[in-house]
Amino acid sequence: MARTLFGGGRLFDGEALGSADVLIEGDRIIGVGSGFDADSIVDCSDKTVLPGLFDCHVHLALSHINLWKHLQ
Image (cartoon, rainbow, N blue to C red; front, side):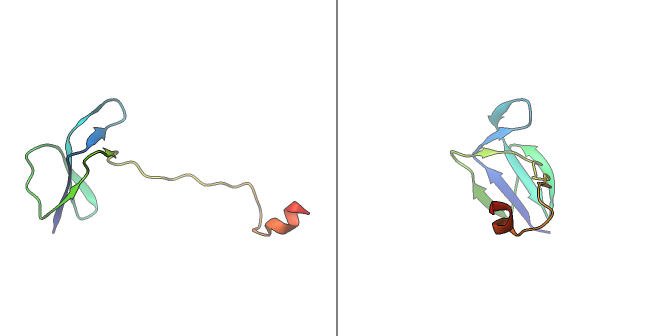
């Protein structure tokens, strides 16, 4: 399986901001640190990497999508 390295960026692990690389294999994070070997590299210079963070929120404010009806 191919390994992808997200390197050169700032890493935020939920507590501290520092420099580290993130190694991905398939759909899993298999390493955080430095000195990894990978098939492809994504340059994250001047970016902040948040490994494992995903958006899982939902807005349940409306029962349907007819916004024009709500405006009237």
